[in-house]
Length: 213
Ligand SMILES: [Zn+2]
Image (cartoon, rainbow, N blue to C red; front, side):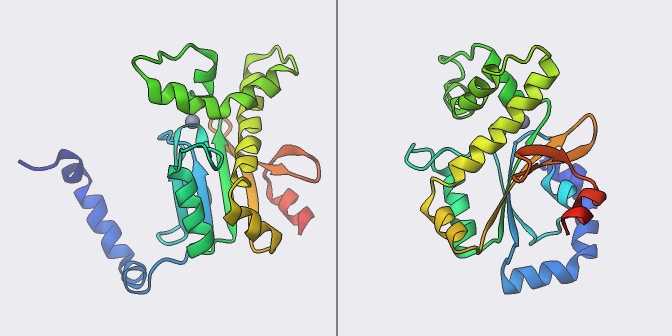
């Protein structure tokens, strides 16, 4: 009797351990010093390391349905605990909230969720409800545009929720932390990021980046 998932991944894992031997040894003996925390959706298509080019030790990660950060004081502490640890102990310089298109958690806001059979989902997605409400006040008729707008609004909502944590507010006030809002477009295979100066999400391209630099 063996574990089938470990069995089928054995060769890849062995190769990874061999190729990254030096880095993994250093991380095991020195500890972790990640530069950024990535808060993303649990969706299997949203792979933080692939989207950022991160190697082991680079990225502290929390992945939850619809990349939600419950505000401080709600009693939902899983994401907040990771955020406090990242900011206070790991002293990350960047907090990234990354949403994505075709998000099942966001789509669930449009359908009745059965409180009797899936109470955890029903309660959890309510943390994204204000994003839907705000977008629907705009009266967008195109369904794809509406979904994209809710995904973006939800990223902004969760960035606000991050600031309900003392640790985040203090680090921002002391200029040792930056917040980033991203959306990964699965179909277009592109990243959009929130540009506060334009108050909108823009598609990342190197020319944008050079213009800012
Ligand atoms: Zn999702």
